[in-house]
Image 1 (cartoon, rainbow over the protein chains, first blue to last red):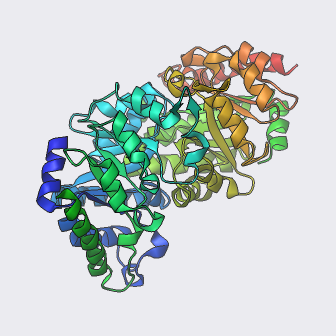
Image 2 (image 1 turned 60 degrees about the vertical axis):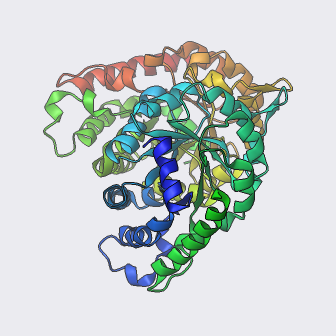
Length: 270
Length: 270
């Protein structure tokens, strides 16, 4: 999928919402537990309910991996379902992988090849040869961690040499590895004011912004500081949408939450 | 497993070798391909052949994940086999995970809970709350990336503020999160002279050292600069041992390669 195609879909849906599929088994509505694959059944209903208001879905791989082989089945089914039913939607495998070249190549095969996700999140610590194997798939994307939304982001991401913080260094150095058509960055919403500084370094790249909803970031500020002429934002919300309700109508309530976010996004799209 | 138990086993086997199970399907001996689970069959024979000379095994998770659910079955079988047959051996899930707290908790469950590995490798970029969930399993370990063995290590790990490089910062800050009984560090052998500087910061912690063998690091230098009074080293070799031969005797040749390394290690153990 190209940046142009993502932007076209944003304009059609008047939304830059990414629905995070952090599908924690313990939080599933009780009546789903008798299904053959409760995690997939939950995801399928969430996807059907929210796809009209979302341009992307982001399965968080940890929540599948913790269920072992059954979890991998749920993950594979979920991605396949989105690709078949909603081919306009961008699918992000939130995996935060990264290893030496020959190993990253295997992770790339797992997520961009076999599972056929459109993008995978990658950690930058091991540098260029840990990232570039993910960039060799045509039409697929790396979403590199720059500034994350958690408290621990302070520990190393703000490490400052010559007035340049580590996350800024990551943004500057990694730009040479890909283009704004195959490389995005994770920038957390909990520090929305930092988006202005990020935009000064990467004006054209899409940013994946976690941290609104349960983590407390402000969508208004994210739009104000982070948007560019091609929108340039995918804003993720996970728990605040998918676990808004645990009744038999959980999917309808999730859709209502997604609509709320979409309607606010529409106002920022002008 | 405690540091004391690992050291006791090092003294018994006169070895601090970790055999890396980077079991790439394309490199398997042809005659194994008809087995029900060729990857596990290969691993089982490598493990049986090399366990007398090794104190640890390190499945590289990418090489399993790229085979989807079948790969997870191979990984689970491999870890279970080692735990049952060679309970003295330390099992490292080389996964390089790390995410916000509630997500790292799920990765910890996957590797230290369900798969029952003794340790998991973790990337430091997201800071404290991305690492500590892995430290809450009694008798289990985090092995945190500090200085890796690949070319890309230069991109960010040497980023220097106030005469302190990022990898040194990672070592200093992360020491507060755990102890030398649940926290080790990855330090690559391709820069063995750096081990002296690492030891000045973390004198007591075990170091997992990749990069000898196929990646060219020197075992002699690693031992000279990295060893402490409790050995403090687990030196990994993957391809140079497990793929030394592809005939029906591949496991015997692997054992010969492991013996060579073990015998050299014995001389450094004094």
